[in-house]
Length: 131
Image 1 (cartoon, rainbow, N blue to C red):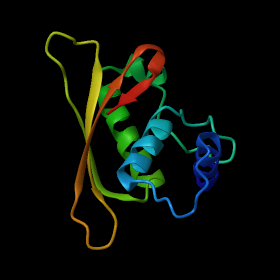
Image 2: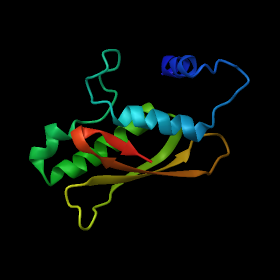
Image 3: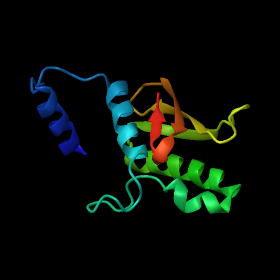
């Protein structure tokens, strides 16, 4: 994971060691990578990522619970800056085909009680949008 951070800084030209990135921005960027990686895509860490929805869609309605569990497990395993992660499916009236989840988690820094909220949407081609 630290290689990704180094590559990001190289690409942006920001190699100044005194500049500290906002931890929430760094976590958000990492979650986008994590949730858009499918299990088995990373040679060095085959468990990194989430299930491919196309692989579980045939098990509907349990597919939603499987995706929810996959997202939660991936964040708990690969994002150590978060704790108490909860992922909830949020069905949308008028758009039954949209697969959306809300993620709530607490920053894992010592003495912090800050809670972060994220929303996701499984978009075209299986891409996960996160905001």
